[in-house]
Length: 163
Image (tube, rainbow, N blue to C red; front, side):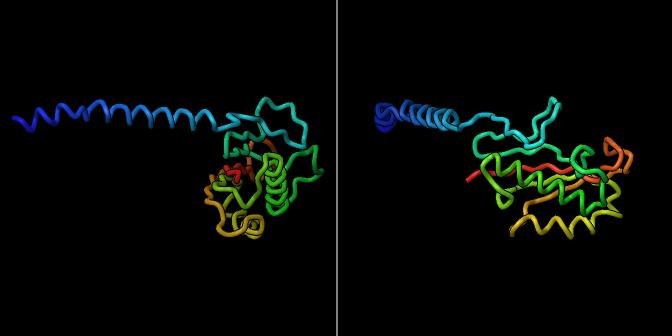
């Protein structure tokens, strides 16, 4: 009995509660210091699209889907190697405008028209743009008529970090 009375008098429970409050306050303070919350990074290509090409939030950068061909930038669509090079160059530009680079890309996703035909040729160009370790990558395949407009063979997006 005496032991229980001594333990109660130590008031361990309120002390533990105050530790949790301090941790919570520190986490809130850290979240509040994570700036910028959300900033649009402009593309060098003017667009009437209501979508953002690139968003920076704290130490992360999100690049939206970049097509491999835009008729106002290049007369002919070109093959998959021309298109992936074009898309990766635009990605590189957006990342640099956001304050990072291709070495800091964490994840890439692509939508690829006719992957059985185009993936090998795409990979011959793709690997040259990323130093080791390469970012993780996934892709979705589809028919050429499902890419959103005629002539486009690839669309690519990514997530990167800023040092």
